[in-house]
Length: 314
Image (tube, rainbow, N blue to C red):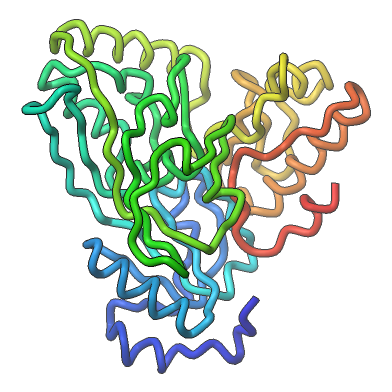
């Protein structure tokens, strides 16, 4: 990790100018509304801007983190001693002239928005994604899924920028998809996702929107509102993380103003003014208690940003 006292802010400003922010609070960029300052924060609005930023940071050997919607990221109170790139590349193009139809989207595009744009044209296949708050890049990176669908089932090709091999197109096989995982997630820092092409199907606008509304209603019934990170832990084989946390007696448990939701125990909610440490303590408590009561070690689904020894050592 870069020493904050030696962070080359002036050198970076020579490249990126005033677009580079210093000591920007990550709480303003994450859905859990927690997180300390990033040594540097840089919004990127086009694929060219992203490529320039990533190549520069690789050449300088500076750590960086590519942040989309911030819905699956827990940033520490101490912040991040590197550069956070805020992905605002959002172009979307639907190809209705070839079979099967597809949608191409840049990695910063909101996945739910992409699904709804396809629905308006009467294309199916992404109904499962309508309620997911993350970006296309995050979905490709972590094989996001819901309601029986996932990214692996739709991906035609991901456009990536690889540290050693430059621009490449990877299909689902190359990404080595597994449950909430991919080759990119298993080897962080080696590549970034620029865009993806997802396969669609034929339907009607009314039918697709009805299915999306059904999923949205289910989400409202079963998941808590407010500031959270989404699902905290992956479901272990043959079971559910929420059930295990509930069975361990932790539903509704609070530390500070962070709570294990009383609606769904795999959602940890910032009730207002919670610190990242409060959420980290709940994670450690849940992981330790579930291990003691069931013998299962829960694996995080969220990404940790910054130093988290109290979580990683369990």
